[in-house]
Length: 126
Image (cartoon, rainbow, N blue to C red):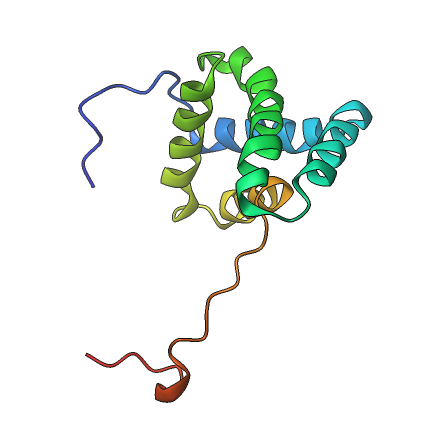
């Protein structure tokens, strides 16, 4: 696949991206951040709209605090660029894919798909 025409804010190798992911996951486990996330979760009450309102900004801030040291901008755009970089390595490195899933699970609620394929036995028809 061709790289995008715009150069990323921080060009990290897969190994560097893995190291940053480890740091980000550790940051979510820090007592003060775990408490902030828990408070945001409590405020959201399992409501998807409230998750976006309360939980996502806290999760974004926690990630920003780590990734700014690696050349990403200290804003939401930096977090998006980091997420895109990680996504680009997921297919090449199962460890990055696993850590990325773990990170997302920390701030995104589990998604359950509606059972609209029940009549086909789960087989897609075209």
